[in-house]
Image (cartoon, rainbow, N blue to C red; front, side, top):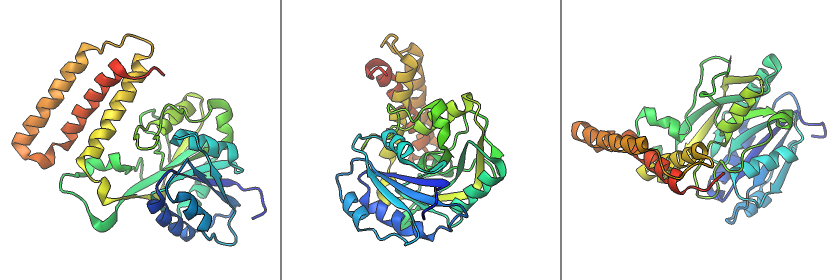
Length: 307
């Protein structure tokens, strides 16, 4: 493609060669949009076989593909590098453990043509690899694995609490001139699962008055490996969320945690015991996550680094 692309599909990856292989194999199944587009892959300091996987990849002959190395670790750093390198008017992000529905990119193109949004998000469905789903994983927990459907029809997103998710979203590249890029203090860094960078970005877009839209038609399937389906993953996710939220709330203030956090922790622990007695271990994970969250809050407040 020699035309200036309208869309840059940006894929950021770090040490996920095994998952990346399937993502790259599935990408050619997507339907091509009417406007020109490019694929931009940001290798975020991978030290596994990711560079070799990318170097050996054979792309469709009519695709425009670039691979960029960003050694500064962190998903936010990788996404900011994608913003710097992108040629498209719109940047659309996909993760390295996802499979796009064939109509995914065309669905975003239809939304852009109809609503001219400044930013947008699409539906994410959880896809269990190996058809494994443990008994304790109830439907209300799927959102913590990336499942998302804000609305059944195209609709504007206006509530700070209903953001798009990082696995399936995009925006007009020019909005970054107003709101900046992604906060490098947020987002995954290696094995650190701390997230929140896309929610922070979304809220800055809202505050700045940009138009954000949702479409359920642009579907991404988030593939979940069986090894990830353990209770520790959910505990760790909420511990890190609580820690980061406490650090941001505390700011430059006292490191002495508010006393009410200890009361919340005790009530959360009590809820685990009560649920266990009434319904068994398979029903307690949600309450266990609350315990991990408040422990993270206390640790973050007392020992977390200053932003």
